Length: 425
Image (cartoon, rainbow, N blue to C red; front, side, top):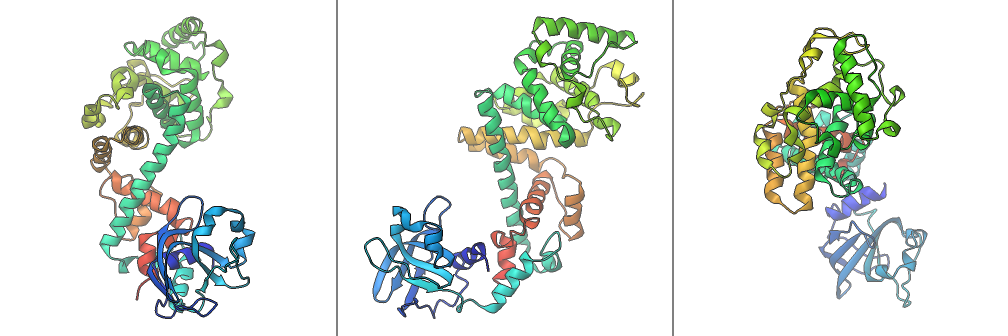
């Protein structure tokens, strides 16, 4: 038994409510278990309970051991004076309030069905990646998709929270925040920190002055990255010369990055930083208003089409510096575009909607996900194998979150699916 499971049992009243007595042998009737308190203070508030002949309304504190009241220092905080019942699994200490009265204690250990404990422990101690996979077909579809939707919403909220940190860093600058998110995602996991650094060292206020000129954008992005040098061919010699000029113009010498900032090993050619930088230049040139998505939400209706920007002719026909890419089509493909929208643009829109309490904008962001093809990766393939394929990226985002944040951490008692399996009669 752990405290989270004890919370789950109380919250869902998974005990014999007809046979409850305090450790002082007073009859206990639960009218309302209360609302879980996510803030400081007792675990459940607004509880309605009759103890003996007295009806009470107040808080309930839950601990594995009644001595937890002192080890958790509840006796030092006045907010715990509202506790009307102390719910425990083991009773090893009598708890007295500041006024000298005893806090009624309810021992749950003997009133919880054994089968509930067995099912809960069976899930949470299961070694499978998806703890309930052997029972997946027994779960009602409405329960599955309710949880998938919940996980998707939590994923958006979590991503929005990370954007708030960036937004604050850039002093409430929506353009710079959106630009930073786009840059960061262009690096994927292997180079996202380097691309985030690039966005900080080469701010959008400089980029904005050159979006009309693809060559200048390439010079700025490749130059600040530290991955440009004076090559033999004429085009790259001109890029290097242009970078030196722009570097002096904007005093970028001290913030130029170096090769050691980048992960250049064991990457597929399409994921090499130089390739991604050239694609970023093309995107910012052909769709400069991408950073204004929060100001021009109608852009969201054609994001996939508008983001199909072609890199300059030189890169279509020539090798990328030291890489082995030669004569390859370097434009961003559909999967890369969708990934950028899912992981950069939509989260910015969600954060904007939350920041301004703008439900229409939130609905717009979710609608974008519902109209983008589902992601196809290791995690979505696991769910597909269980008979739950993703219809769109809203589904795949929910399933990814469910797997990463619930299944992998065995948070079955916090999951609607886990509840159905554990609480089954």
